[in-house]
Picture 1 (cartoon, one colour):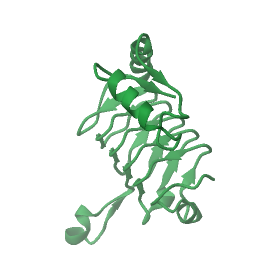
Picture 2 (cartoon, helix red, strand yellow):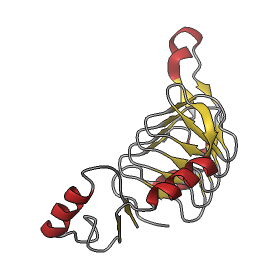
Picture 3 (cartoon, rainbow, N blue to C red):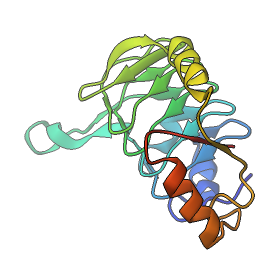
Picture 4 (cartoon, rainbow, N blue to C red):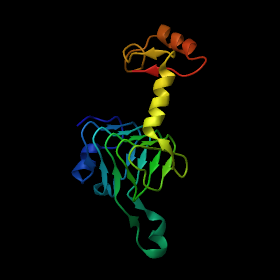
Length: 174
């Protein structure tokens, strides 16, 4: 299992029952419900970007009803959850689905769908979004990981070059 920087302690969560597929990426600052982690499953090759929150409980009923709501959460294979998204109890995110950054997922996201917003709504197919990005890559700057990212040892000269080349739009890093 890969070591993740910062919280969560995946070894402790999986020891308590979190189901974690192979080659899952979990970004820094992500919080997976530590109180009900056995209700959560994350499929192979899924990506949870930085600061994602995954909750299997909802305490809004605790004071008045004496009980906290709980439900399973399932994140499918190769699903991508954007930075700072919140995935709430009872949600299934299908295989190959994409959830946009900052989205609040209160309802299921079908396999292959693209969902964004608060509350997250399906706005298209993930494959269509990826095809648009593939087309955008033509004629745009592309950079390798090594020498062009902080962990890849970017140099001051490469930072300046990237700033200049991205002055009129997006680029892509491997």
